[in-house]
Each structure stands twice: as C-alpha cells, then as structure tokens.
Image (cartoon, rainbow, N blue to C red):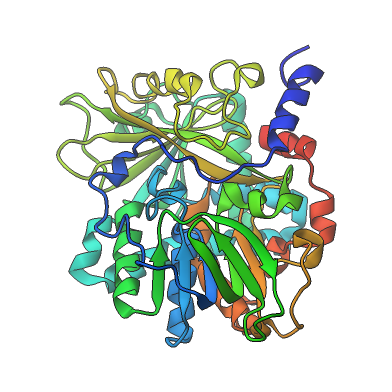
Length: 485
C-alpha cells in the first residue's frame, strides 16, 4: 500500500484539514518581498473607529482590490480594513510573484468537471487578470513602477514523459475551444529549442503569456493612496475575534469584536483566505490552509538574466514549482513549491498547516535542487532567503465568492436587498490568487452595493457561489483527492 491509499495517513491529514485554522501567528518568517517594510506597514488609528459602512477583514490583494473598487463606485463610503499583523503580511506579501494562469492544463479539468460553458468562463476570467493588473500599474505612473508588474513569457517545462504526452493533448483541447489563443501558446520539444529556453532534462515546454510582479510593493502603493483619500481606515495588529448580529443600531446590522474594541457596520467582508474558516467554522474541512515554501536563490555569472522576459514552472510527475526571476543584474530566482516532492503524503507537513513562522524542511530539500536539474546553466545556485506563506484551498478547487448565508454563519441575514447589509466571503484561491483576486474584488464591490447584474457576464458568479449544495459536497477526503489529482 502506498502513501496515497494508507488509511492511517489519510486519517491524519483529513483531521488536519478539519481543524480551526485560527488567526495568523504573531511571528511569521520574514519574506524577501517585505524588506524594507512599507511606510504603512504598522498603520493604525489612535482609537479604533466605532462604526463603518463596511468592514473588510484582511489586507491582502482581495481586500485591497475590493476597497478600491468600492470607493470608485461610491467615494463617500466609510471603510475599515482590519489586519491581524502588519499590512499585506499574508499570502499577497509572501507569494512567488507570478501573475499566471495555466489555461491549457486547467481548462481540460474544468471542462470535465463543470462543462464547456463554465470552463470557458472561468478560464477567460483568469486570463483577464494580467492585462487588468498591467493597466492598473500603468495608471499609477512613476509611483507604480516599484511594483515591477510586467508581461513575460511563461515557460512550463515538463520533466515526465507521460505528463508531457498529456500536456500536448490538453493544449490541443484548449486551442480547439479557444481558437483566438492560437499563436499565443507554443509547444517546444526540439532539443535546440529547449536549450534556447535554458531548459535542461525536460521532455518539452509549453510557452504562453504570463506576468510577474512584486505584489507587496504594487499593492502597497494602491493601499497608501487609498489611505490618503481618507475614506479607508487601515487597522493593523487588530484581530477580528467574533462577529455578531445586532438590532441595537438599526443602520448597522453587525458588531465586529476585535482585540482593540468593537465596530458597528452594515457589511462584513471575509477576505482572509486560508484563515476564513476561523470566523466561519462551518467551512472547516471545506476551506483549509496550505503552507507554501518560498526561496530566493542566487545564480552563477553564466546564468541568463531574463527576468524581464520570462518566468518558469517546472512540472514533475506529480506537482510543479514556480519561478520568477529578478529583472535586475543579480538575476536571482524567486523559487517556490516543493509540495509532496520529498517523500509524499507520509512526510507532508504543509497540508492544513496555518503556521508561517516555521519552514518546510521537505520542500526546501527539493527546491535547493531545482535550478541544477531544470536549467542548462543552473549549477552553482544557492538559497539566500527562505520563508513560508499560507494559502487557502477549497474542497473542489474553486474559490468561494458570495454572500454568507445563515447556513454558513449561523447568524440571521439582512433583508434580501444587499444594500441593507450582509456578510460576504471571497477566499479559497487554491494557490492562484494573482489570477483570481483583483477582478474578484471588482465583482464583489458591485455585489455588495447591489449591482450584481453588472458582473454576471464576465464573473463566474454561479461557479464561485457559496451554496449549501456545493458546500455539502466538500469534505477533507474530497479535498485530498482533488489535490492529488
């Protein structure tokens, strides 16, 4: 019996996936991206605001995008953003810097699971993020250049023969249904072509459009500008402990209890990804944390400096890693991944783990070997910086974006009119936050303010909905099966 079918191992892991993820730990590892800290990293009011139109829990890309789009729709809104640690200290400030969908791979699975129409809608939504974020960065002018948001060629290098054969089939299926994408995605298996791409030991590569960025700085510029406008209050080191319905304040349906006091508000938005099940316990076992390992690795002088033009995703027999490169002279590799690459399920320490104060030894053993295995001139690389971050995964691989109904929160809902108030969730990005969160924030802002009809054409509203039926199909066992493919 291998580890994927060992009942004792499955029992251990499903128990971990069912636990309360708690709130973010106080002493996380230090991310390379977060040095030096933003000037607003510790931003907080001298006294916690007593009330707000909207309370957003979480200061990552989802919360920031939602706040920005809410204020674009209604500049008079009074918004409070709560953050348990420093600003943008969660996954957004700890990820790999990719703005990358893998449509040829994901579309095939989506089509099998949800049908062609839904698969196409989700795929188009993900692909739209690169241009949306590039445009947002360009609109920031000179100040926005610090975020290094850029278009690159995403190189998926495949190191297993069977996976390569499947990849070619999946690419053909994708292009059959997306003829407009022909020419934007190319297949390479000639030895000289692979060498030109700096790829070693692979059976082939698929190259397509992708993006890279320094998300902590990019989102930091946007958040700083929002704070200057005066309609957003950022409260760092303020943990949301509990949410209650109240009838004592007719215009404010909710009390948000924090470590610094209580806020009355009309709307509460859960933008806490892997920690969302803490305040919404009904999600435990359905939306769970997964710890990811990141590194910065130095390269030898001969290693090509192509960080302004390329990113990489080495794909193994099971799983994949992700690599962006510094666009500067140093050429450092920002390399993450390694999940289940060092001994499989029986050695896993990351599934269901919400603790980013420690490192993943198994992942690190794998990641330190990747440059020399994956690249023509990758020998001599060494790990210079290492840290972890907490992602949020769902039982079926799709995010949860919706109004939080009573069956989930246990709290009475407001009137049917969304403008009367309500709880909302946007979480569970399954490691692909950069191609989900920005436009989800735009859609969620419209939904909160009662303009859902404006997003149904382009946002996967039905597919991401947090319905009782959908949640009923999720459990830790199905989550593991989905994760393992």
